Image (cartoon, rainbow, N blue to C red; front, side, top):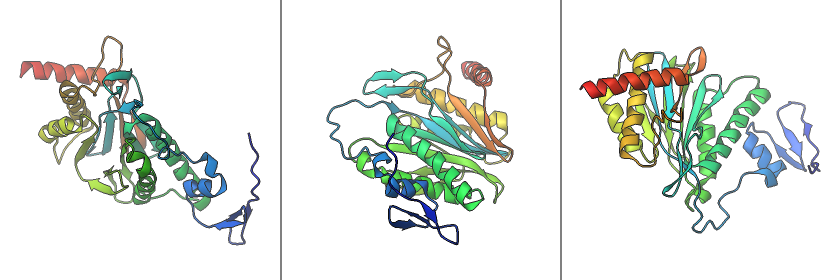
Length: 277
């Protein structure tokens, strides 16, 4: 590994880093990396991708309920009209009270998740406190904006950010466009190739009050089932292979994984209810 020729020092205030003859006083890991090691910054926008098929993640969704927020996604990734992988992870915990789901070009999306995690860790170490929910959304918005050149070449990354806002004591959802614009959703949202079908399903099942944990999981499961039924790029519950959608819950106590066993049980309940209807 090449050793950095930069010399890093700290000012008397302890907040200003000086490296390579340049001064940087911010708390962004991405900006720090771009100034000190520009060769390590992920760059996807300066390449001619031509007709190369890139794996794409498909449908992810988020919704709020009485204890916080839920985020979920299917497991299928596609390359054009072919299956790239059946068990990709699209939902990631980024800190103790927030999670992110990715749709779009899988490689740049996963890279963005990793950089976003480092952004939050870097801020906490430098400032000695956790970044607020709005601040986290702003940092993610910045990373999406940096991907715009790649997005213009077809490598679109569409993250969804959910978490428990400790300041306002409630679950929250943010969606983003390719320019980095961030928009709050008060109830639910879904994006990806099956996003429209998932939103239509959530529109029927969502309740603005008294939405319990189990009801929220069932609504998410039904939405992903509806999306998989209508969209060829969305994977459903593959009981033969034992591959099920991923779901996480963000509450005051932290981010919780919904187990595969619970997801399967929920799928069976929803399936029986739909058959009986």
